[in-house]
Length: 406
Image: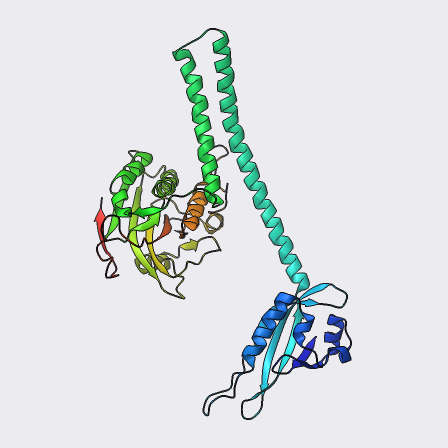
């Protein structure tokens, strides 16, 4: 196994035969040189910085000397010109007084492992791209067929001398399909985080208690009940209000379809102010976390989050549907992933919500388990000022108080 010993400033004082074979240099050519000389520039810079941290002073009387093993991955520049990826584990050697004498290192070649992981990642990326392309092509082909069919019908009726009401239906059909195509484009842009947003200071409670709530009730229909649980003095959010409505509408439609066949069910929309402190990446807390632990419900979200410390407005949308098994929950945010039959849904709803949340500076999470329903948590950044006036609790930073609204 490749091994070496380096001085506190990173100069090689001993190397093993395996080390020599790995780097393709003689032992004499290696000794006295800095180990960073055998690494590519980014790795060399990281190693020099780590070595500088290791040249610490002896510990004070009564304090133990640091003897932790330091581990990091670097890229080696072999004499042949080939790159090799290695994990270096170094352990400090100190004298009786705690002064650092040298570091003993062991290198593990992980080049093939990394290549295998890269190949798997590329295969997954190409599979997702294929799914995305297939879904887009399928949806747009359906829309184009509607547009072309109505335009052909319109052309035929015009040739026959038709007018008035006879032309209205094909024109309406073509316009409706074109509008659906526009909505699909907006969803794709939101998923890719390239959509145009016009953020404003938004009173989320006021919107849910007014136009947005009416929009959700209309989307849910008469069989599904909407329950609002709005926190008193909720902080205002910095968000595009129209895109917020679109995101909540997507969640409501998903919930309505999940609860179909269960006497309509109930959709609960809750708001809360959440303060994340440095090092705190828990996006589900309080009663929601307790419920998750009690039921064993799974929690899922795109891997690229955590959220930066700060204040956020959290909107939790909960349905009383059947819930998601783990294999479905794991793919919930993937574009065009859907459990519906072909032609019954694009699978872009949650992808749009995720893209909108991230582009807005927030995040999204899902809690779900079979038989336990589903909750989608939408986190939006707090606005610096309230719309028109400071919200209750805003100036003091106190946590807002919850209130329920049917």
